[in-house]
Length: 226
Ligand code: CA
Image (cartoon, rainbow, N blue to C red; front, side, top):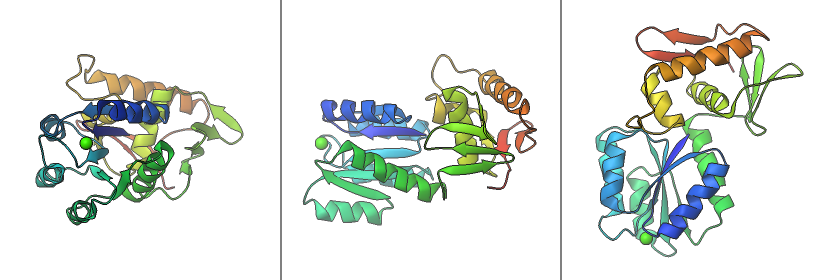
């Protein structure tokens, strides 16, 4: 899952990014509203942490802009304690949660995870996947008693597909949510195919994976029941 951190206090933004990276999020930062607006217009994010006190921009406009382009990004508002009116306006505009400053990074993480559970309808940390169990808290993929050896990025890719179960995800979407925006030099459309091929190979050593479907000309989809 990827997060855009919109915060003009660079130290705080950096601290949040460092913390969330350790929790396996992909992070980008924007230190001005203008920069954030440009990024939201062209990139796909799962979450935006939005400081409403930006020098150049009304943070609430960023939520409006995202809704106008039908982005399904979730906003978590960060405000000065006491800025009640802005918080309410933010929630009215469709923000998913808010956190008054100063906050503990662990609480921020817990809030993001709570929003993620609602957004992706994740009911338990153990997600069933055919004959496999994806343990999302230990970040392990199990087949019975056996752990399937997959890389961190392969786990992230499978996880993103499974939380979006029954939706077809395009290669560029998968790339953006797991590796970063598709304007990166490294991106080429075969990249995801190679990763999926490796995942299938590793899993098929344990059990078949008919639930991991290739949708021709579009991308990939997981259809397994939970
Ligand atoms: Ca600020």
